[in-house]
Structures are given as structure tokens and as C-alpha cells.
Length: 149
Length: 113
Image 1 (cartoon, each protein chain N blue to C red):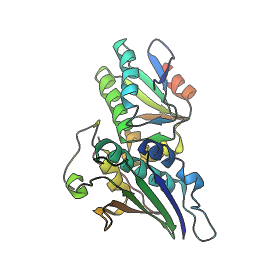
Image 2 (cartoon, rainbow over the protein chains, first blue to last red; image 1 turned 90 degrees about the horizontal axis):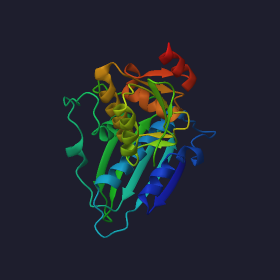
Image 3 (cartoon, rainbow over the protein chains, first blue to last red; image 1 turned 120 degrees about the vertical axis):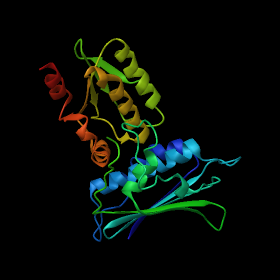
């Protein structure tokens, strides 16, 4: 099992560095090797999530903080992102299964992309007052969205 | 950040997307293409050769471009699509709408012909 942990107090920097996590993350080892598509999917989900925090989360007087931990297991990526925002009820923002997007939407695709790319998605408060976003991306996942056109 | 736009012909403009098209510069992208749409351009080639990030807001701004030109039979093509962008293209199936070319030159030739 190979893990990478990063902590940021600047969300812009976190977003900029997420795109290159796959380069420094030992996702390929004697035990497990992940394909590039899974790595790019992981980077995309992390980008969308931190962008979501950047644009919509309330951090009160706190300096925004995110801690990312990526773990490469056999056949999948497991990830959590801790943050010190006020949090929110993720399930109330996720689109219903029968809710269609308007054609060629300009907004509202971020959480759909996250939901489509991931398994076992959750966002919940922790015992120490933070919030934790967790997800899994199976390496054999072939995600696609069916509501855009 | 402004985007590098190159006039390929009287009908076609190439926009070099650069490293990222995301929620932080999507409005700049829209301002860039709108200037050319206002001048009557209806064919756009998006060069993704150096692009490491295309997020949902960036994709939404490309949809905005498509909505601006499609009523006049305009076209938006993707050229030299990088791996991270290809993941978004496959995930959202945008290849059904935006024709892809292996290079900017190939897209330019297709639009000229």
C-alpha cells in the first residue's frame, strides 16, 4: 500500500499542485500499478472538490486548510480530504438519479463529475471539528455522464 | 489571464488553451472568444496541447462558446488533446459534439476544406 499525504493552507496552491500529484505519488510499485486514466480521474475529482471548497465553503475566520491523503491499493485509489470549513450536507447537493441537466450547461457539472468518477463517496464531520471528504476510484472504472446532450 | 488567440483565416480562430481552463480563468476564456464571435467568427479550434487541467467550469465555458456559434452553423473543434483533457472528454462524451483532431494543423485543414 502506497500513500501520499499533503497539507495546504492556500487553496489556490492546493489546486495548482493537485494536477501534478500523480507525478510524485508512488502509484506504481512492485505491489500495485495504476493506469494513467485512473490517476487523471483522481486528480480531476480532487480539483473539482477543492474548487468547490474554494468557491462555496465557509471558513469563518480560519485560514482555509485542506489535508489530502491518497492511498494506492490493489486495483483502486482511496482518498480523503480533510478541511476546516463549516461543512455542508453533500447529499442535499448531489443531483437526484432522475434529475437531468439542461443541454450544454455552463454550471452544475462539478459534483456530477465527482459522483460519476467515484465509489463510496461521503462528506462528514470528524471528532476533532473538521470535515472529511472520502472516496474510492476503482482502477477498472469506466465512468461516463449521460445527461449533457 | 488572457488566452492566446490566433487568426487562422477570415472564418477561423485558434485559441491556445494553455496549462489550464478552470473556474479561475473561465471568464477570461469567454471574454476571449466573445470578442471574435462579435467580429463574426463562427469556427474555433481549441488547442489543448499544453493543457493539464480542464474542469467542469472550463468545460461549461466551452459549452457557452458552442451555444454562441451553433445557431449559425458554427463549429468548435478540439486539437492535440492532452491526456487529462481526454479523460474529461470521455467522461462527458463531448466527442459527440466537438470533433477532435490530432493537431491544430489537421483541424485547420479540415475547416479550410
